[in-house]
Length: 345
Image (cartoon, rainbow, N blue to C red; front, side, top):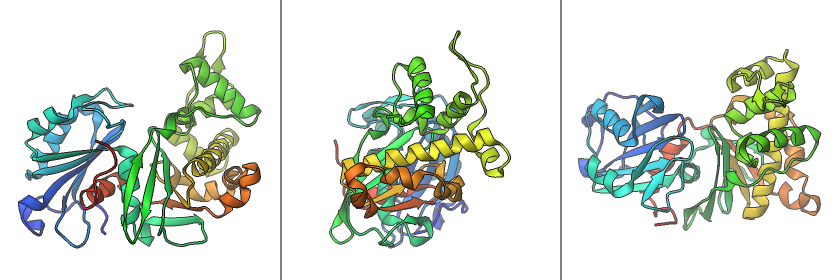
């Protein structure tokens, strides 16, 4: 398995014939990522990888057309991962103002087959295709993942949660979930402050409100007391990337306090989700955590992951990994084309 390639765009870079080519896409809340894969090759490859800012395009159809026009290839099949449930014909993205009908989109783009996946369903499909280079052991007894259930969870624009079931010998399948939207359970005074603020703004506080990029910014604002409780306004919100950078630089106590709280909450949510899934392993994905793995390992993540009363011993046997593959959604979409379709319509 190779990482995404920005190779020359001529179709001659592919092996096999055009009928074996497929578009794979990962449509997030901020960016859309695309590649071409050849489903007939022995090795799973991602070629002609590109990334587009969603804000520059009016719809999913328009950004796909821009990509296909740029690379000059028209594959007959597509597997598209979207940040939304995909159990209906009419799709509305959760963190993006795009909506579409799956059959209308297929016809408009001229695909013979269009497979839709939830974005974290695609990330879960990537796990069986990961090599040791892109699956970093965090707390493990088994250095590879051979059997499910496997929880796949990760903060990014939102909080994705999916489950990988099956095993390496007989095959895998993916159960797509919306587990990131369960209610947040604060465990101390700092977390109560964050919970009350986000509940006041949104009516409730889900895990996704906290374990995402904007969540880092909100935790930081609350802990710095940058909230005007009279007006309900946030007075000063820092960019989440700046908060993380300041925490890692080591001189900003507020930023370090924020990132430490984020890691602790992530540990609690990972432990809860592993119990719900009955997991043998848990894989942390998403675009945020790989930026600060050493900080995570020095934080209260492990303590909070295990802090489940009588089930500490159970969770000690759950292997925890971090995927560092640059495009797990694309890899998973490509892998899903080589396997059974994900559970669902």
